[in-house]
Length: 305
Image (cartoon, rainbow, N blue to C red; front, side):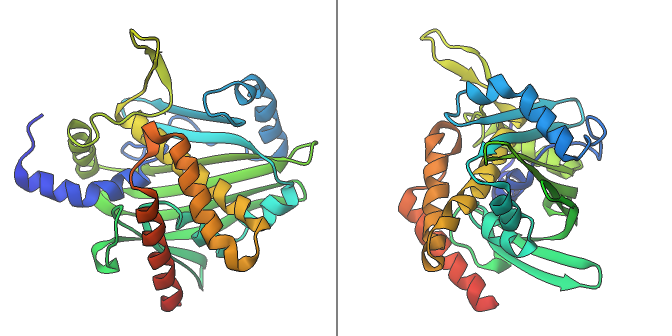
């Protein structure tokens, strides 16, 4: 595919933004199927069904990642067991005030602020590239926060945004969790959005150039030397960003045991170490560059408040 210089310059600026939010359903507003039942019983049934995959997988942790593609849509989601009781997970993630601390761990999220208006809670999120940027050079997305369901042993939360960069629209980020009998919790994370021609062209340009060698996690075969061959293309994009989001959730939970003044640093280091565990798929920046950038972004965020 031959890409003009003007088009290349355009999508080089905005593609990291587009790729960050590329998620479960990438089509003209179409989805694979109706949303699954959201309840503790349904989520525990999924835990039972995934028993073998959670015990034996390439991730070296009880985690299962799925992606799917049709002519008009993509889907990516993670199910995982975390070593925290449901009461802790519920208090941490069933609260809009905490979600900015989660989202800010992602290398492309430059700013996040929670506020309230007549319709409820809104998360204002600025998305940009993987280095220091003034907020005027980033793209702002407004997510409406909705606590969908909350019971003593289950909760579900959704973040919805009507529009985003490159004519993308109808964003939905969802997390649900339930208690397990052994004192741990079972999480299900997914996200979705729709896009039109502009976004499709941008993704094609990315996959034809700087994204050509990048891979996801699904194993599609073996190389002559016996090493696994991993999925590429748009499913690879979805899988990489699904994992980055999950690792942000994991890092936030892991840092809760630290003194309040130490939690930011612990979150940052835990997220970076998690991505480096899967460096073939997720390595983007060097450790010190990431830590320095994020410290500055958090300082900017606190100053804005």
